[in-house]
Amino acid sequence: MDGIDAALLGIVQGLTEFLPVSSSGHLEIGKALLGDNSVPEESLLFTVVVHFATALSTIIVFRKDILFLLKGLFKFRWNEEFHFALKIIVSMIPAVFVGLFFENEIEELFGGNLLLVGSMLLLTALLLLLADRAKNTGRPVRFLDAFVIGISQAVAILPGISRSGATISTSVLLGNDKGKAARFSFLMVVPLIFGKIAKDILSGDLSGESTDMGLLGIGFITAFTAGIFACTWMIKLVKRSKLSYFALYCTIIGLIAIAYTLST
Figure 1 (cartoon, helix red, strand yellow):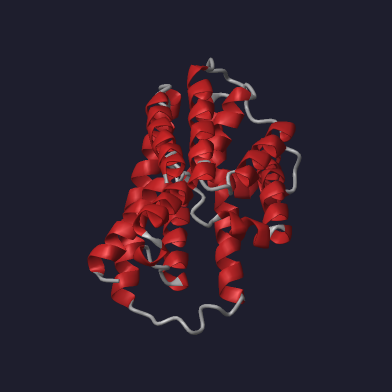
Figure 2 (cartoon, one colour; figure 1 turned 120 degrees about the vertical axis):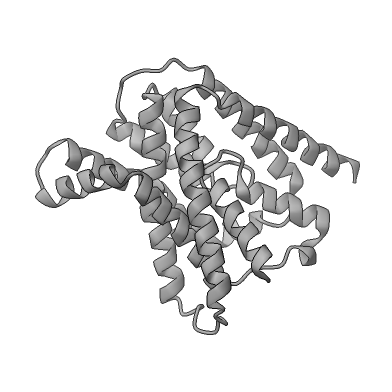
């Protein structure tokens, strides 16, 4: 991997973490079209670094919200901040459960099954289209909503389903305000990213990784910059009901993936 590869991978990670197009689905399509050997596995350390960069970009964009939540959480008072922090924790339960008990089954889904990827992209497109047409409200996310949105996040582990698209759409379809739905979707993934990073570090798998600080730095900067752009842009798109553009894109890519599978 050279500097250009590191920059491109960082940009892709930063954009697809927030834009509803399913990075895992696109990776599976790339593997199937180019061959597994043509899309090499990048180093775990590089992956950890770019994921940390996107998590940090979320923290920067929502720094006021996060400080607000932390103050409420550590005051241990039954106020708005404490409520919201608990909702974030509730939303994490389904994804943590699936990650802990179904890790092997999840890995088996990532084998270049384009029929599955295409079908899930169509499902993502449908969710985005329905959310785009939903009326905007002023209602915040409730505790039951948080758990249901968490289930959507867990289901989004499937290749082809966008995490941000699934969680934002589910929240909006539950009747939540579009802006608040996007905010909740991006905040709820931050603890999971840091949890995954901690797991990779504690597993000891990083011990044998070669370190090229230059490439790591390029990946970090590009992922961080792209993440801030994508996160900010996505919030504006959700508020303005512009998700239909991504729905059209996912539909086209999904149909191409299905057609390619059926023709081979």
